[in-house]
Amino acid sequence: MSQTQGKRTLTRAGLWRWRRNPLRRGSDLVEAWVLLVAWVLAVVGGALVGTTAAEAAGQAFEGQRAERHAVAATVVENARSAVDAKGAASRRLADDDLAWVTVRWRATGGVEHTGRTQAAPDTRPGTHVTVWTDRHGVLTARPLAPAEAQVEAAMLGTMAAAFSGGAVWACAYGVRERLERRRMAQWDEEWRRMDTRWGRTTG
Image (tube, rainbow, N blue to C red; front, side, top):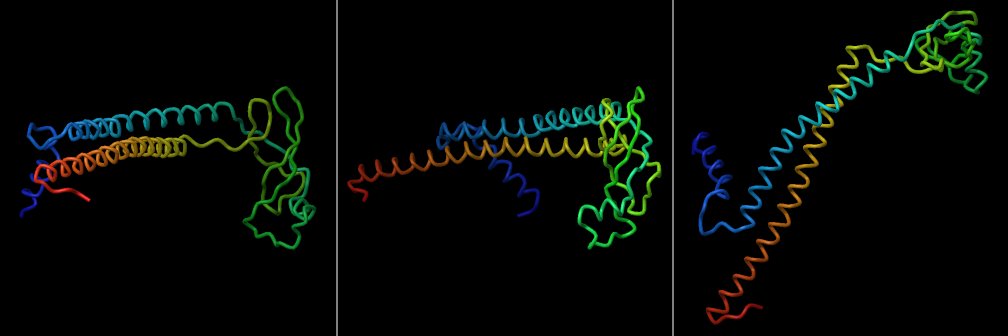
């Protein structure tokens, strides 16, 4: 059988539930509607959920960029001394490792703040580093760049679409399983009736 004939056979096999025939049961038609609704919800609903999630994530990242500000801070503690003070002297820091240091900066209004951030292990007191603060002057993480935010938002949207589509198909699969069990029970009942008509008894 050619590939084209195989596709036609599969199409006819999938559409038989919609056609009137004496073998079609009510549960077959219900299953056909369940599959149709599942396809629509998985494709259209998944796309809407993914788009909404991506837009919400993009707005959240944009809000972070608008709220967070880069501030020049001064290191007030030697990085290696800070590591040694926490009992990590036995671990030799590599040149590309980061250590926690204490820094001091002035927020809007001239209020002085002190906090801890990561810096190179050879950072000395008096060194100026850049830190990020929120609108309250509290240290926070660097916001995502616009390009990074777009990639992250797209990934979150894709995950949301996949999750919603999977949830729809999980529900549809559960309904199909219940319909299949119902059909099997109906088949058993009909076979018992046929055996009774033929004068046989089922064990």
